[in-house]
Image (cartoon, rainbow, N blue to C red; front, side):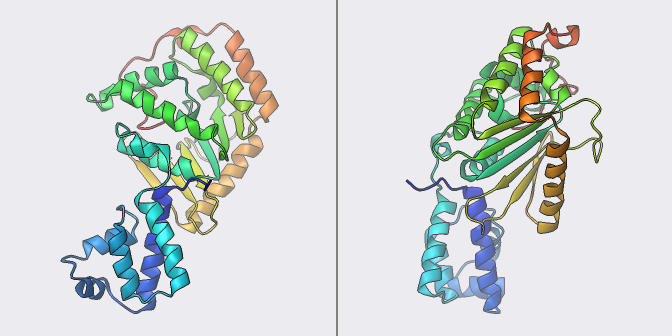
Length: 306
């Protein structure tokens, strides 16, 4: 059975390969599009930037123009098929929003995932009740959001952690995130126990960053870091904001985040002590602050896809 692939990453890989072939042939966007009868260079530009799902026929035409040798051609056709369709469960989940779909595609093909969250439990670790509380609290940013569909999408994404050949997943949560401020007591307890149970999986590591730990920047933006089985597929870091996400693929940026990942893991509690802290939280009485349900509004700790 082939390993899952990440369509968003395969699109980026395919685009980079096609751009390199065009430049090796000393061809401009205009020249290539002219030979193929494409009315505008925007189509080729979007393919090279990995911004659109490529049509296999278009890729075959480009490979003809660039006179690609058979072996390289066959390899690029495989990448193009992955980029266009992918092999994963999310293809049939039409109700998944665009932001969640991008993360789902990254998660589905990843070999390793690391997520840092300063205030929330990441989507791959959420219980349905916690996910619902978060989504409902954040509806002020998207009044038309289908809460039930969004919860189903988050739960579907979590299957990646229990599949055959799962990614190695690490979550670094601040102690503030582990406090689960603003969720009802029963939701809080269930979510904390769920974190402990997930941390027992052989491919999952949950680490808590204790109060008082010195941060290299304040505040640190939530981010997710991905690597992939094929070393030629580009590593990726996603920065999460309230309304959109930023994807980083430039090597200098990725190297800086790799250093940040090493630092976060180094100062966080180890897995055993993190599990002990989460278990103690689950068994303790929540504070008055934590017993109040998340109230909708700009101060609710919400984000677009997590």
